Image (tube, rainbow, N blue to C red; front, side, top):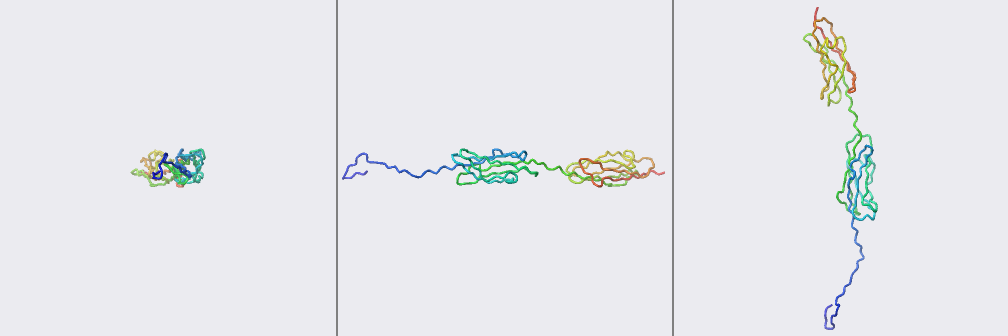
Length: 258
């Protein structure tokens, strides 16, 4: 209070008035985050994966959190259909989103489910805002198709003269990634180990090759003989199928005269 000639300033000379506001403070938004609390899922026995959505702050009211789903796995195909939101109930700080794989018959590589939080007015998106679950397949690829083997006379005439060899060619279809052993039996009028050098009864087609030769090397004896036959017939085995051309003949010509 200012002094004036008409009065004297007494004590107290100062007073205070308090103005009370009628507006309530805005509550602080919760912050939400995402984590993969079980990051491994599998089609085997439908082993589930789990995302956990967490919030900070008050838990007095329920909070609905929105998210999107991505990754290489398809929602509703590779795992049971999931909505794109989850509600954290009142009194709780977290809620789970469960990924239940679909056990199909397809042979697949590992697939991923990626959950990413979506912004909303009701909350603030914190870090981490995304998480990933991996779904492992339980289907094995079918066994590779068996090759089919065939045989032909690559050189159908052999002779004792100069021990000119004859040869069979054993061929296969399909992959050549690994070697393949083909078994066979020998018949005809010529005797294995007597009229031609001993053959083992099997031949191996090398890795990277589609065929292998079986060489018939005549033995030059002193007997006078008519032409003799070497008949090679493919033998069955679990490692391959036998084609229509399953037998072939090589003729050994004699060089002895009367």
